[in-house]
Image 1 (cartoon, rainbow over the protein chains, first blue to last red):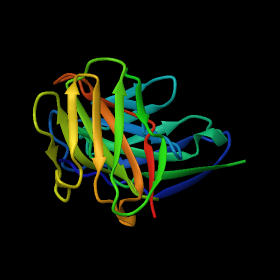
Image 2: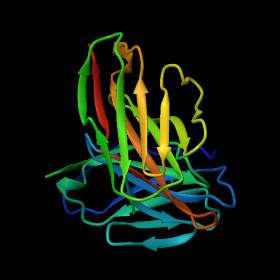
Image 3: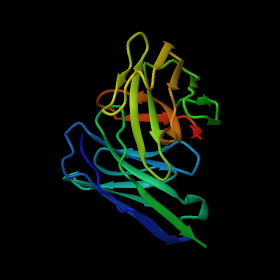
Length: 108
Length: 117
């Protein structure tokens, strides 16, 4: 299973754009890149998934360069409610294997 | 998507006892997964449960300690046996959605917060 590396923590002010980068150097051809969000006392929640280039949904954007060895989750104009742990996963098949995640703290 | 419920949501148990956690899904799913999340830590996969077959356990987890049942396509139970304080964690049930070549998603239940005293 491809291992991922992402920053342990990040701080941001409300209204700013937050970019969390994840490296996955040994990603396989059939792997997708998936991001989950977890609030305290809740199970992880799917945010976005992509294979290459750019994917955007109502919550976030995911940027994946051509070599697919890294990816960047972009959260536009964060609010206090975006304070959570964000997990980057490489998913060729289930079950998901979680790394340590990035703890994002949004400050007023 | 799938909606997952777990019972109980939390419990405080004495060491040496056992607790069975129930997981109910609102649709039929082939594979269900059980994870453990210790305080301040990431999720660790305990086992994969397919209906009609024995659960597959990850390294460090054994059936005698964490017996799993999967009687049908919408339900599973995880038992934490002979508990010790080290078993204090959040236990999460999860199901998959997706298909080969299209990427997979997993949906998670709200978790069961277990405290062993």
